[in-house]
Image 1 (cartoon, one colour):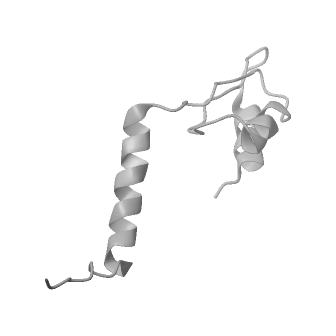
Image 2 (image 1 turned 180 degrees about the vertical axis):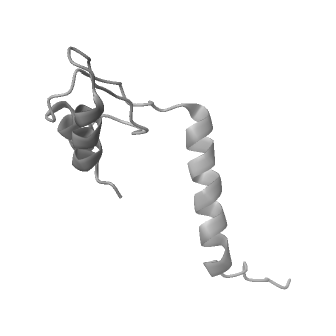
Length: 79
């Protein structure tokens, strides 16, 4: 809250005459949501953040933390 269209509408109302609305998102890659920003008829849209190795590391760390409580312990083999 607000939605992206609501935020853009609100920003347009506050924009000075002749001003340019610029949208900077935190999207990681181009795709549907990035395309929708372009379709909102704003002055400029920032490129996606991209595949920064630190973001990839963070995603893997969080995924492992979320999955670890559900993993079964490894089977013990006696010889």
